[in-house]
Structures are given as structure tokens and as C-alpha cells.
Length: 277
Length: 277
Image (cartoon, rainbow over all chains, first blue to last red; front, top):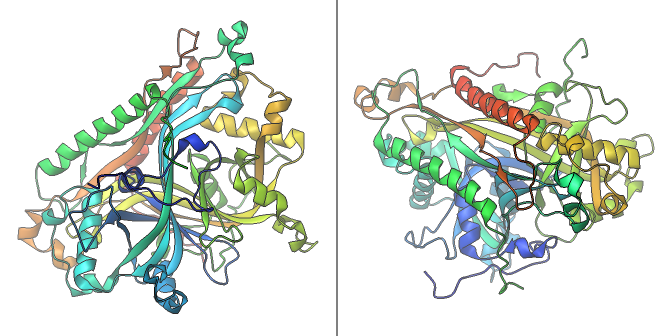
């Protein structure tokens, strides 16, 4: 853990402009939101398309050169995909010569990654004051195909274990040659990132909160929202009688944690990071 | 309801290339996924930014000219935002002259919208065969600010009621002049769209499903995943003793529906739309 919290630089494209006090730039917070998000949305601009592309992908922050690095440190984002898919093809053909030699991290395709958790429906007196409690993170960086076998295996294990902790060593590993061939991994060198977090209850204008008739008529508060993993359902060729402990234990714990976060977020007002520009 | 299911045209940028049998182009299916998604991810390319932008936004399909239109018909997407935010500014200054006169729907800023539901973790024998059950929709279109007051009110009601059905008339409406001023609505004329849906259990290669030792060791199946709305928590200035019926009734029903969908998706194999090109 660094002695001082690391923060991403605020660039014009990454800065939180609207409701600035919800903006957070610390690496640890941003990486935490990304790593706890089961689906990331990855955007890039394909050549010859009038519209940007968005792909839902699975990804995870990590450091191949220093696997013990913690969430508050400088990390790469690893994304999982297929060699045949568009993003992989584009990355493979991206002109790496675009990057100046002194900035090799700018090699690859520019992409933006969003990780978003919905934590609650905030119901206020007026439609305009309605809101969500949420945690939203963005990463901006350059994506390149991982070609080193050891790094690819590191990332595949990292990503598999992000779906279910410890799943990798409880499945048939290592991948065979055909599997290594058909799976691609993208490494994103992160240029910067930002997060936006809302917690707390509803806030209405004074004109409304002083209107007794309105207060007597409109329920105000928060409906906490969280994700739940239901009882596992065995597949057609499953032969293992009981759902294994590493899966059941994690499922129950993750469900409980998610519920607690959503509920406790209601009682917690936004803490503005005063050190942030 | 049209006599024949309407489908979006498949463009090079919208076509599902990988795992084609998961691709769906019917308007009803795509609009259903969008409308049931509490957070959409909206992507666009800001001028002078090296990276595309992604914003989580609230949105809903609708037809101002024919509000009774159903989900299978041609609809617009309405997105909710703030006048001060970047997307609104860009839209306002987007050169509408870019659109040929005979195609006014191409006026505005090109955007891509993603709606994604995670429905289950699919755990297979090998990491490579792991997957998610999911419903993912993309819409491609041009966004323009809604300037007509009646259309803006229509969209604000539509979007508020998408957060909690019937919430609009149970809150303080109509919005006052300041509220109308500070809220912006974007209308997206949809050029095309596509969806990708996975249901069912795990699928492994025969080499693995015939490996008795492996089958005896690795649990395979699906962990259904769905969103839950917890017990509503009253806000600081709430005076309404009981959570109102329209909110409680909907919450319980939506929770039950979400759970049933995730569980039943496991037993349902992908139905390939054979009529799709």
C-alpha cells in the first residue's frame, strides 16, 4: 500500500463536471468499482462506422509484473474476448507506430471502459429530485493484445476467479493448445480514470419540503437495489452431488455484502473528497 | 401490434458476428431489454477527445406522436440528463446541417446505447467454456434535444414511471418553470439495433464431458443472478407512515419476476431466430 493515496490525473475528458462533489479520483476506489462489476461496458470507435461500438465484457485489474500489487496501486485492466471478435481484430491491426517511442503505453486502440453499480432508487417529492444511488467508474486507456503466454495465463486465471473466487484451480486447467489459441486477452494501459458515487437519501428544494400537504401525500425515501445470486442449478452432465463450499460460501457472503452496501449507502451522505481538484 | 414482427435492419456495425444464433433483431425483444434496464450506457465520440465517452443514463422507448404504440413498433429512445452536462452541450451544438434534407432522422449526434442484464454465471468444466446468461441490446441512432414542451413533459413522465411505475402522478407535478429549464431530454431517432441473448446451462467439449475423473471433481451448472429491490427506507423528511401500495406491489412483483426469469433461463436453450439473416 502506498503511503499516500494515489489519484488519477484529471483530464478534460475524465473530469466529473456535473455534481463535482460526487467525483472521486483515487485509484483504489476506481479499481474497486471495476473489479466488483461482473460486466464492464467497453467503448471504442471502429473505423468506417458512423457509431461508436459498445461491448459488454468481463475484465479485471491486475499487475502481471507484480501480482501482489494491491488495488490502490498502478494496475492494468485485463479484458477477456475471442480472437474472432471485432475488438480483437481492430486491436491487432491498430497501428502501433502511432505511439511516440517514449510513450509505449499509448500503443494500441483507445478505449473507454465503464463499470456501474446501481445501489438504490431515490424517491423524492418531485420527479426532478428523483435520483439513483450508484457507483460508476470510467477508465480511459489503450488496449493491446496480450501475446506472452505466461501473461495470458495470468490474466485468464485472474478473470476466471473474478467470476467465482478460486474457480480456476477447481476446474480443468491449464487450458490446452486449442483453448489458448481461441481465447484472446486484451491488456489496457490505463491513462486515467474517474468515479462518481452517490449515497444518501432524497434531497428536495425547500419550497417543497415546507409544503405540509405535499409531505403528507408523497412517500419519500430510498429503495435499496442490489444483485443476488440465487441457489445454484446443476447442469445436465454435473456429477458432483453437493454445491462445493468455495462456491456456496462465497455466494452467501457476496449476497450479504451487496445487501448491506445498498442499505447502508442510504444512511451515508456523500463524502466530498476535499483533496481533489 | 403489427401483423408481422418488425425487425431492425442488420448493418455492418450492428450485426452479431460471434455466436450468430444468439443474435436477435426484432424490435419488441430489443425494446423490451432497453425498457427493463434501469441504467443504460450511452457512448459518443466528443470532438477533441482521444477517447469515446460513456455515460450511464436513464432512458425509455416511447412514441410522442402515438403514445399507445406498443413495444414491437417503431419507437424513439428518450434519455434524461441535465442541460449543463457534456452530452447535452454537444447535442445542442451538433451541426444539424450534416443530415441530408431527405433524412431528417440523421440530424443530431451519433450515439450508441447499450442495455445489459446479467442473468446467470455459467460454470463449466473448463475456464474457456465458462459463460454468462445475459440479455444485451444495442441501439444506434442520432440524439437531439427535445425543445417542444409537450414532448418534454411526455418524456419526463415516461422516464419517471420507468423508475417506479405510476410514480409521476404520485409526486408533485407538473414541474415548475425552473425545473423545466434545468432538465433536458434527448430524443434518439433509432437507425438500427440488435440484441444478443444467452440462456441455458454449461456446454463443454466432448473430450471433457467424457472424462469421468473430471466430471467427478468439477461442479457444473448455473448460478442464477438477478436484481433485488430491498425494503424501502424512509427519508429524513418523509411523513407518509406506510409505504404506498403502488410502490410495494410493484417492488414485490418485479423482484419475483426477476428471480423467475433468471431461474427459468437456465432450463431454456437459446432459440435461434431462423428468420434472421
